Amino acid sequence: MFKNYKIKKNIIYAGKVLHNLGLVAGFDGNISIKSGNTIFITGTMSYKGNLKNSDIVSVKIGEKLIIKGKKNPSSEFPMHKKSYEVRTDINAVIHAHPFYTVLLSVIEIRPNTNLTPEAFIFLKDIPVAPYKTPGSFELAESAKMLVNSNIVILEKHGVLAVGKDIYHALDIIEKTENIAKKTYYTLISGKYPKLFKDEEIMELNIIRNKLSGKLL
Ligand code: 13P
Image 1: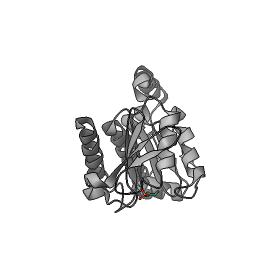
Image 2: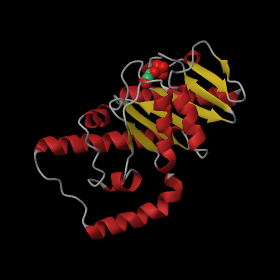
Image 3: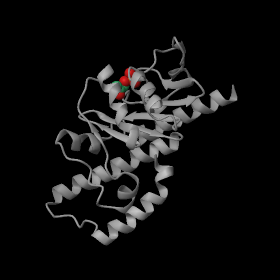
Image 4: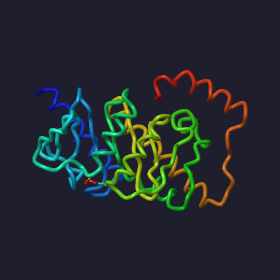
């Protein structure tokens, strides 16, 4: 019981962070935490800035899904479920709509992870999944791209991020949006950005490799 209370508290916290940082608008996005064979997920059309316990639904995974809660689970539940199947090492999934990350995907530009050490070490090559209809089986299949990355950009839509806990998933979304914003402003400055030199990349790769077990 206490455990469920703590899980809901963490989902409510993540909703506030996403809303306050402009990583979702209004009802957009969805958040889940897995505990054993149960996925706790935001109900569909829940306002992320002020989630209540009653906005969170539990879905027990088995031969049949056992859904408990006052709302229907998020329409992106299949994408969350697929994420936990692809990445058995993670316990939290967030789908958000970060402004600059989505804007860059619309103009078919990838966030430039060669601009800062954090982006290079923690993000490097962020996969981009081609546009698919929200809530569809095809969109849920994009979760397969999480096999080598903790985040996937969903073209013209948002991001799908995973983490060992909710903070880890938030971290990866905040870092991605941060580098997308820097990429965007670099582009509109009209100046050529100073990229890492080969020897700097070598040193960053050493750090990245040391951390790799903890990154994925
Ligand atoms: P839900 O309100 O069903 O969670 O959907 C929001 C969303 O962002 C769909 O992609």
